[in-house]
Amino acid sequence: FIGSPGYARGFISRDGGPFQNSVWLIPPAPRGVIYETDKIINPSLSKLTDQMYSEEFPMLKVAPGDWVAFMYLENGHVSKQDLPGGNPKPINRGTVYVYATYENDVSNYNLVDVHLKWNRDGTGGDGKGKLVATRHFDDGQCYEHIPAEGDLEGITTFRMKSLNYSVEAIPCQTDIKIPEDAIVGKKLTHFWVWDWGTNPIDSRGLAVSPAAYNDSSVTTAEIYTSIVDYDIVDPCAPELGEVKGPTCKKAGKPIKAQFVKQPDILKSGIQAQMENLWMVEVPHAGFNVNRAKASKSNIPMAILIGVKDPVKTRLSPDKLMNSPANPAFRGGSGAENPPSPSVSSLPSSVSGRPTQSPKPSSPPGGGADEEGILTVTVTVPQKTVFVTST
Picture 1 (cartoon, helix red, strand yellow):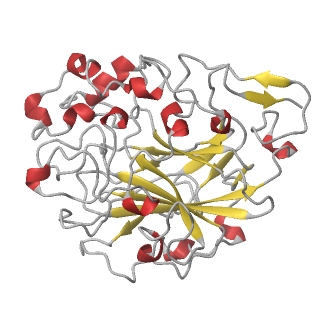
Picture 2 (cartoon, one colour):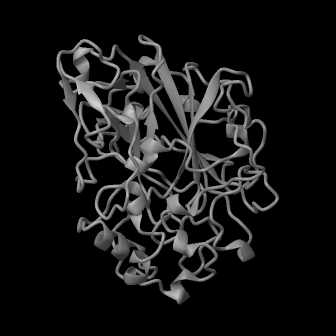
């Protein structure tokens, strides 16, 4: 990760004053049913004003072609979701949709105006935005601390072992590319939409969330959203720092970017996400499918698909290491045949102060904490990408 950090719209640190929740629950608890009038974002954050960002928590500056990484804490949704008493949830831990628009005042936008309407061609709904990526909430490497009762599912222990990392927690990421034709001087807005609906008891072990929150297989709708803005600047702008993105052309001799086989994952983007914007194929993204689909090879804990009682089955770290759950698909440590991204995959990306997602044990709407973004760079295979130097 490189450059100065940026943050979500309206971000206020809990340490610095009254905390304003930047993650919005749809529908509000305890309703459980989404109405057409439900706003896509917290109404208090719907207008982009000077008060939404500050010197301490600024808007992120990005250039066309850069990459950004949303960072958040899994808060048990990845490592503890299948504990006794937990609601049946998909193995990908819900699908994340990212929508982009130049409409910065979103006061008039309801969830149903955007979600499942805006498509990747920009022709859906009112035509003022588009779907730019789909992701698994579980990014394949994130986990949180092992509680006093132990790691009952074995997921945290597995990740610490397979990633050769001993830190107490690793935040999750949603890595997104800023379009190469992004308009310099404009403000680009992203909606981060996490579909975390509950499925019937007999569907425990389902691979991915249904494509629609109102699907007949969803017993309780539960969607969380957040909003982030970017100041689109010239690719060679000095405020981007010494390292420029792939669209900066004012340089002298090209510099090769070398792939680091064992990068510090706390400071790196996720290679698999950078190569594939569509981890989950959904009908409204233009794929020829009638339901949500994802390859087992990119679902981090695919070994749990179809498992009705993960705790009783007790998947040991050794079993997980020899399963599709091994994060080999993501490159870096433990990678087998990591994908080779194209030139367009070179990031000058983002990530940030993680937000805490609502706890599985708390009722819908349970507090989300902090969210932010921070510019990042991700290393890529040396033979693939060139970066120009100034």
